[in-house]
Length: 436
Ligand code: XLS
Ligand code: NI
Ligand code: NI
Image (cartoon, rainbow, N blue to C red):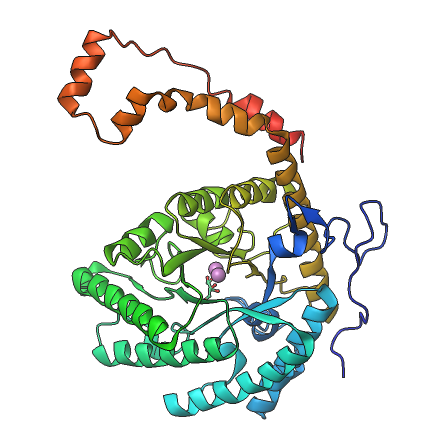
């Protein structure tokens, strides 16, 4: 039985196509800068927004009325959600998916029972994967919904919650490995605090670090090949998050010297909430060698929370894609649609249209960014801006071959007197627009 009324997968029809359900730019096998578009973009569909969320908001409940949300047979409903996920991936041509343990299977009365539910549905998923050739981009554990996590998971004041967290992650990592997951994600959820009046911040940071160390150790123990990805987010749910942004997460990763094993999963909406741009967070992660993957969505620039809309703004995607290409593109990572349709979009097909439209916008962004790189003007201007650093003397200064005193003596002796040059921001913005 099929859930969607659309029966045939979206196809590439070219930029002039008038058909609504079609790709105008996403031509999966087309080569762009030496790789196919499919290899560049590595799209993933997420379980939680696509099948679990019922369309609720703080003022009202379920608008979607999906049959599985109202079934008394919880395991049957979980299998139905999996069927719908695979059907949606087929129609959109998305090859990867992502999930939390609690998205795919119901929570039981004990952790043992919950784990058994997750394992049972994971084998159901495994069979569907073998048939469809769909792959797992990453798995993760939901350590924020149940009330036991209201004061945090690893950073909870109660050591039993820390232990429970570790146990739940262990199983989620085992299942992710079993399904051939390319990465394992940790989003901090409630790892933060509401008020300092009841918080020992030093202890909580130590506990966060310990959990990460345990996870890295376990990754090696089970031979999980992919990286651990931390997903930064500045607030929501907790007021002060310990995983605020890429810079904050880098300090945690580097405090363990774990840059090889732990990278970041950068989300557009989280970057906006942190007062950054999406491209800033990508570029910073790349500069530090911790760029891993992306959660693709769009924040609302007027509201201070995670609206998780589908991203469709081509110029915005173009500058993000430019940073991804400059970083060398994805290896194990990809572009996970951590995005949800609006609660009035109640028709099943709306979900498929949303993904296809956003995929196409990303493809256009990729083509634009590749054209900017091939044109070379922008790259040339940036290179010229830093050209002074290529001289032997300046290279030596950067490499630490001169002391502060030596540099000062040289400035006096050579009468160094810097002359400012234009940054040309408007001209560069106009240049980008020529490609969008
Ligand atoms: C929430 C996060 C979450 C992670 C996975 O804001 O984006 O969905 O991606 O736990
Ligand atoms: Ni996310
Ligand atoms: Ni989010």
